Length: 150
Image 1: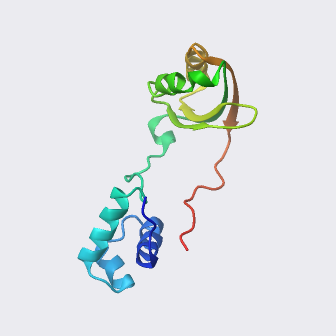
Image 2: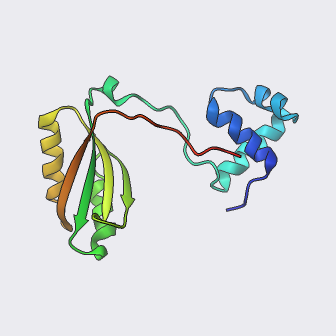
């Protein structure tokens, strides 16, 4: 992955604060052409500096009232890829991290209610390679942001 330069940082600073900001306005604030902004953004997608795009939907609007973090202990580190493959089949699992510490993995997932959470946890615990799980219920997200661009 190529490093980003000062102009890329200026562009990223603007578009990460307001993804709907037209490239025309970004170009004006950066002192370059709209085409230059478009080319720079495309290059940052291509080289992996920008990952993902799109709208974030509030899970509660879709009927998902519970957000949980689940610590997963594996029976063996060799099972990691297989477990990730199985977790990918569960649409309510939205993030997964391979971790050090008490658990081999941490996931974030959503459930519609307690009964739905029980179904999901049962599904998790039936995955070959998962030794145990611990579930933490998220009550509120106090911080949700990207890293500062300096």
